[in-house]
Amino acid sequence: MMKHMKPLSLYQKLLKTPAGERGRLLGLDVGDKYVGLAVSDVNNKVASPLSVLVRKKSNIGLMAIDFEFLISKLSLSAFIVGCPYDRQRNCPEATQVKVFIDSLCKTGKLEGVGYTFWDECFTSKNVDLLLEPLKFSTVEAKTINDKFAAVGILQGYLDYVNRNVETEQSQ
Image (cartoon, rainbow, N blue to C red; front, side, top):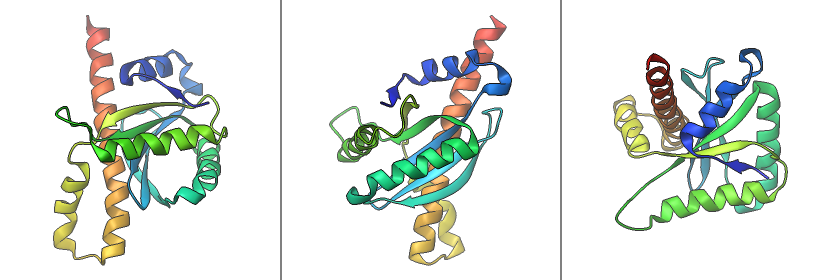
């Protein structure tokens, strides 16, 4: 079973691993049709776009196999999953993200992989605004958007945890 952790706890656990064995992080932007992916550098400081997976209810098992391959190929240790937070009400997009993660967990293929949710507030909208003047085709713009939204999610997380670690070390 995948293991849900609080954002700082996940990173603190990663830091307890010897430097040479520390895995990288995978950022996920879960949408209706696609899951955008971003990966951290080996020092877990910088996020870069990776790819986009097609998402269908019927292919969750295949997606789990794709994730297994990425974990092995890229030495991934945990997933940072973008999740919209709306403190006023339950957000249907947040429910969709949690259902996706629950489905991944139920495949049993990602045993022991840690994950946390990270606020993806406005990441897709910000990327839309950046891409608009470039006049990409609709499909091309959507897949680029999903990858870079995942970068925004993962980079936001990395900046937050690295800032907190530096603050703790200087005290």
